[in-house]
Amino acid sequence: MARVLVTRPEQDAAATAARLRDLGHDPLITPLMAVRFLPGPPLDLAGVQALLVTSANGARALAARQAGAETRLPVLAVGDATARAARDLGFAEVESAGGDVDDLARLAAARLRPGGGVLLHVAGSKVAGDLAGMLAQAGYTCRRSVLYDAQPVADLPAAAQAALRDGSVAAVLLYSPRTAALFRELVQAAGLCAALKDVTAFCLSNNVAARAGAGWPGLVVTAQPTEQAMMDAVAAAALG
Image (cartoon, rainbow, N blue to C red; front, side, top):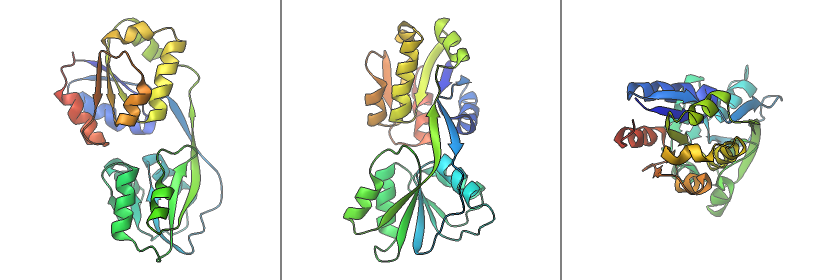
């Protein structure tokens, strides 16, 4: 059994932790971001032909903002986890791009017409990639609505510090460039860089790996930017 740090926000990390236990590992939920939904009235969806959602937190923030206001528009989600969150929240017409923002832009181009109305990108205050730019090049009008904020924690959670200090951590899961860079900064601030000498970093993309920094004894980039690919990579690794 290997100890694995899960750096996702708590609501997303619970499902990942359960899957790691099924693989025989010992997950330690180590949230590096605190998600806050931004207050405001329901969105004005007049002239919008579809909603583009790039995270499960975006789906949750959208549902919270639209509470009491019916939304029948199609939802195009960046990946399967985001699509599943949207369906669980009651959105009826949901399709997954099964990847990253590039895949989402391709799905939008395949399913929607440039002249059919605005594409509304539900997002956080920090975004990865240039979804609006890609869609603009294809002739679409894309508008972004910032519905939530993800604030970094001030310190690496105490349980993660203790686990790194006693050498029990075998791996860390890194899902975004922002959290990868933040993890490295927080480890350095805690004086625990030497504790990474036996830790494998699993990264959801090459961009995530680039921000994770150098010096890892093992650095694995998943075959696709999906949760399933992350679990497949962990299952294939010799952790223990």
